[in-house]
Length: 288
Image 1 (cartoon, rainbow, N blue to C red):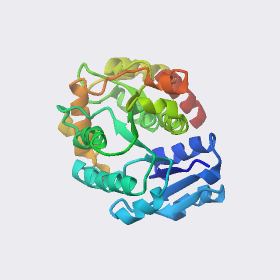
Image 2 (tube, helix red, strand yellow):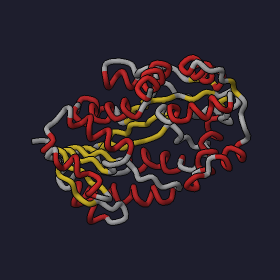
Image 3 (cartoon, rainbow, N blue to C red):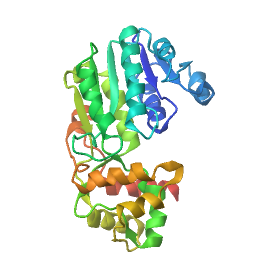
Image 4 (cartoon, rainbow, N blue to C red):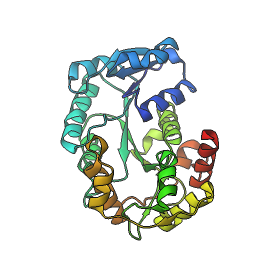
């Protein structure tokens, strides 16, 4: 039986990857490496193996990855590239020691050499480091997640404006659920491993006025575009000290570096990703 291992399996993306993979393979073939095993109790009840994993401890990573046919690595939610690169080095070394047959790694479109995003150094490091390893691997680069737009919409309605500091640039999106489905599909489809990197996006990107129109249409409220400055944005959304990181991401976006659109999702899934207006409408209907 093929052995699948997922790290970071209780996070937003990781938990959805687990659910998607469980629709494709037997639960008993899935091992989860998690920081807090109690959070994975529901998965354990389905027959999955749950093991403690600390990205700072290479021995615990090796124990989780041991003899995996396919391992999916979802990074921890640290806010600086140095921490993530250190973590990733531990994962690479552990994957080689554990003799992982194929490693699937989460990437992000903000990985360009001239991108000011705080984590672009990490995401740029990932493909170069994997290329230098002895591992068989696939990188799945996510566009921006569309999901946060749903809980954010009431605030935008109240402000009457989208306020992202993007200027004339555009953003591309993918939903968590469709990203997770693509991860699971690549995991079970070895013919897709011949391409080392895929970029998961919907079929088009959106300028901020275009995004405002979509949000207006799905909400029935008038929403325009009135960007704040990067520094103001950082101050407004500094919960958990994430303000600088978020502002730096939109600084990259303002340079046109978050606008990538590909047909890679269709290559993997055999259909295009759900369009942003349809995604928002379905999720808002679900909330109501």
